[in-house]
Structure formats: structure tokens, C-alpha cells
Image 1 (cartoon, rainbow, N blue to C red):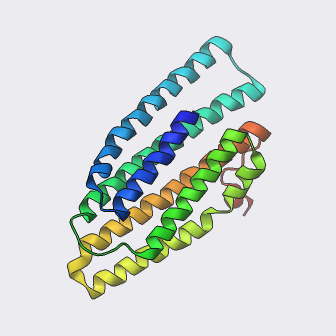
Image 2: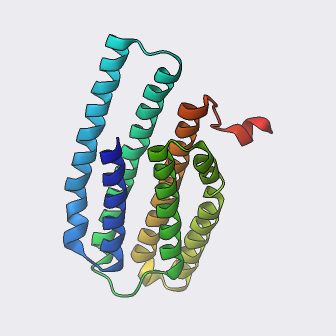
Length: 205
């Protein structure tokens, strides 16, 4: 699990650096890196099934097994999202012009939330996980701003439409990374405190 977490962080960083540096070679490496994450995901599936079949875990142990599987799903999705970002990096490398500063801010925020959630997982720290749950709102706001800016740029300069569409795609992928980081934090709370906080705000309303 820790290996998978480390790879997921690394693949996201590599895909973003491919954008900032117009590095096509690194962008193409991301696809191979994602295959390793997929391989570990399958190993975790097999391990979970084996544990359930041979040890019949209950209570705390069962929650840990379930949480591990939930986290693995989210980490695998992060790998997929990083691969999407890398595809945009390849396309953007063929065009001139720097990336919007707000997109870099959004990337930093998404990476930070992912790192915090994985730290909470590694340290089994529900308090830290709870802090992550409140960090996603800013990501949502900045994603919306990146998209709005891109739409306005397309209206003003239709010749840049394909470039701006990639900025929109990157922003949406980064917002999804933050969503999966939030899911990981929720799974940490489930494993450590036996509390289900998923959709808590919506259900409370």
C-alpha cells in the first residue's frame, strides 16, 4: 500500500512537470509508470480476498482490510488521472505560451491534499485525515476559475481553443485527484475510528 501511495504521488508529479517543462519524454513515461500502479492494485485485490477467505477478519481488522481496498481504488484512479494529464502535456508541448499561473496553483493544492491524506494513512492519524476533508473547497473554487478563464480566452481568441481545452481537462483531472485524496482521508477515519464520514455534510442537511 505504501509503495502504491508513493508511486501515485510520483506519477502525478511527473505528469505535471511534463507540462511545466514541455517534457514529452517524461509524459510518455507516465503510461508505463501507471502500469506498475495497476499491477500493485491487482496484488492488493488478491491479498484482500486471501485475508477474507483464510482469516475471516472482524471488527478492527475487517475495517482495516476494507479501508485498504478503498484506498487502493482511489490510488489507482490517481494514476489514471495523472496519465490523462500527461496526455495533455504531450499536446501542449506542440504549442507555444506558458501555462496559466492559476493552473499551477491548482496543481499545488491538489498535490498538497493528496500528500496530506497519504501522510494521515501512513501515520494512522484520524485528526490529520479530518483536516483534509476541509481542504477540498479551495480546489473546487480554483478549478472553476481556471475553466472560466479558459472559456473567456476561447471567446476572445478562438485560435487558442485546443490549448485552452487542455487547460480545462487538466483542471478537471486535478480536481478529481483532490476528490480521491478526500476519499482516502475518509477511509483513514473509518479504519481508525470506525466512523463513516462519507457524504456527512450532505446527509446532515
